Length: 139
Image (cartoon, rainbow, N blue to C red; front, side, top):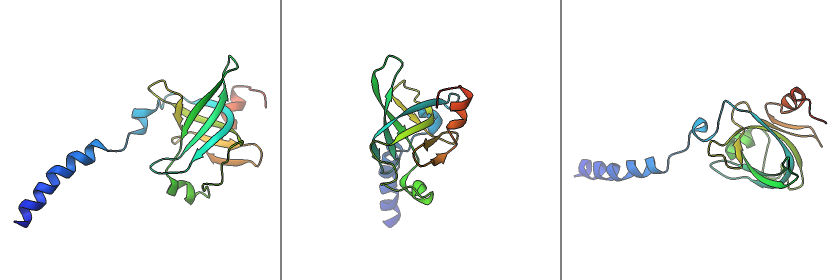
């Protein structure tokens, strides 16, 4: 009876877990492209399964756009010294990230992305100033 019950429970749990599975980074973001964004933090969403920086970016036409920058889970960030108070509204950031495949205003830091805060030289991930300098953008 216990074996039958266990199998029945598993038959219901497996499809549920597949429906709520975690997304693949390359499935959500274009890992063949690296974008450079500069802007001011609107919010820092320090939560699981991923943290997000909501960044106000001024586009080429002078309009402000809101971008969602996906970062690692809270535990990973805390292991690198970043907590819920490290990034705050009003902080200026330079970010390199992989753009969303769906064309939305989001991108992921992934393994080759990073963020830099000029005010105190906070650096997380790869240094975005390298791409900034490569593109010869003003400092």
